[in-house]
Image (cartoon, rainbow, N blue to C red; front, side, top):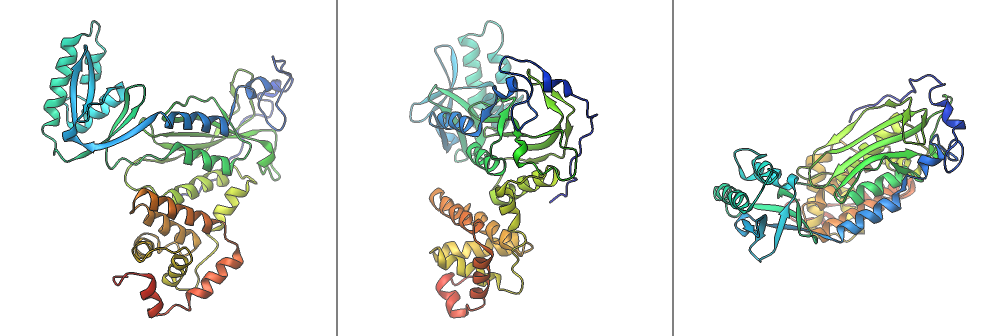
Length: 399
């Protein structure tokens, strides 16, 4: 994990100072506890508002995972559709069309999109698109699975492989809300599938120390569940945000990025988000301190296998689940000899099971995140009491 340098404001102290006395429609100067003009603050959104919009979108969509033999390209009523074997049909967006073209091997990834958007598009064009699409799909293993993100309005917003691993926007919003309580979304340009905007940090949770406190902080964040952009996060400082959203005296920090592919370890990603914020813009938020503290809760001379056996026993994991937990820790997290490593091993193991079990594992990880130092010491002491017979009760014979 990279080490970041604490951000320092690079602009002159007078930059944006006029915003303090700027008269607007909602009042004069900054909203209380911020360096954001009252007019612009009134246009920002709370985490709850953004989460509500996100949940509404989720309630109107379905991710369809199916073999390519069940997907067809068709021309109906002079429109191009993806049609499923069960009869449902969806009109792909331009983005989904390009994803489809790339994944099934259409000669040019933009061919279908450009054809549908030509002037005078008609049924002959749509029929040509269907022929090209079906011809490309016939070369794909018929049992290869693809995931279609569909909505009740009849659109398909994404066409991705089974390996594509989106990070749930709700999870990302919950993490940001935990680390930045009272934060507000500014310059919001998100939609049903995408987070895109700045989270303004209230002065009440910023740790200015002995530095100049005449500035504000924010985190530019992004995530897209359909693959238009990576998970991104960039802290920055600024002198002021004007009534029209203009940012004065901004200094940007180091960015983190993650590609949506394979099994994404959410616990590790959460720690990287916390570290990125805390190292560049120190906050007083309890969520960050709590999560970073897991690194200091070391295993020491205790047996990691005993710790995992103890946790598995406490939370009634099956032998198969406990064994996967142990294997993931040994192969992927042994270098993290702390509670953080144990949590990561657990969340990695959860990804090897069905959704219900995955959720259960994440809930156990959340419980471990909240344990006290005394409780951790109790787990360490108990770990050293386990013997081979105890391990036989917890793990499968291959452990």
